[in-house]
Length: 264
Length: 68
Image (tube, rainbow over the protein chains, first blue to last red):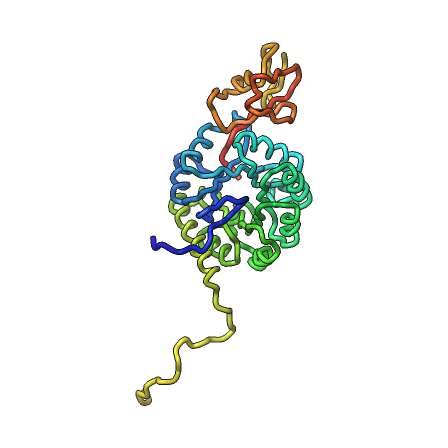
């Protein structure tokens, strides 16, 4: 691959990351498939959930460590601030990290964030010393409120978890970008590479993808594609897109066009 | 004594500690990435061996799983 000079690394909580793709672990049928996708993604941060031991297979924690990736525990499935805070405390003890991807969902059908419980949990976790990366709706006002209470990153959804619908409201993501100065990470809804590139072009600092990789026909290939797309989108955002016009604009001067006579 | 281990009723020896509950749950001594809460309170691993359990407590033993 051509070496591209990416201007600056992503910095979360003082930690410098070269990769702007964070990957999830959900949906892989086998651990070795996840491992191949992790290698292909070149991700440096991986999010994992916590469950009772009899519902889990061992080995995931060691595998991620072996690859030198950083664990970002999450509170997937939590439906109240209380539950999310207790889960975060267990995660801090299990993984020896203050980082937490805070998810507080409002119901099990839409899996959409519960704004009220989310803000409450974020406030308490920050106070307790956690580095909170908050999964949220694509609402710029809520994004700002999450930054105000001290979240280290804000993670708006592009569309519902696992839907693969991409970014349904690009304007809202662009407004979230304007609203916060902490890292903005597009979380949920990525379906394929172009969605990830769009997120970065809209000004996101990183993208999180889980189902887009694990449920792809070829997860390893999709992990590579997303890594390339995230880089492409990031560089494109730095380069600056041209304005959209409602009319054509010639890229070639009219002056100097040779006169070859009229066609019969 | 009777305790609840990950939601299931279990009878464990009187005088057992949190470390014993971990082995009951199938956790090897060296396994990393595991956490335990007793009645909702996280017990740091360094204190598993010194934290006695008492009748009726709810013990949750968790580890990393794919998800989120």
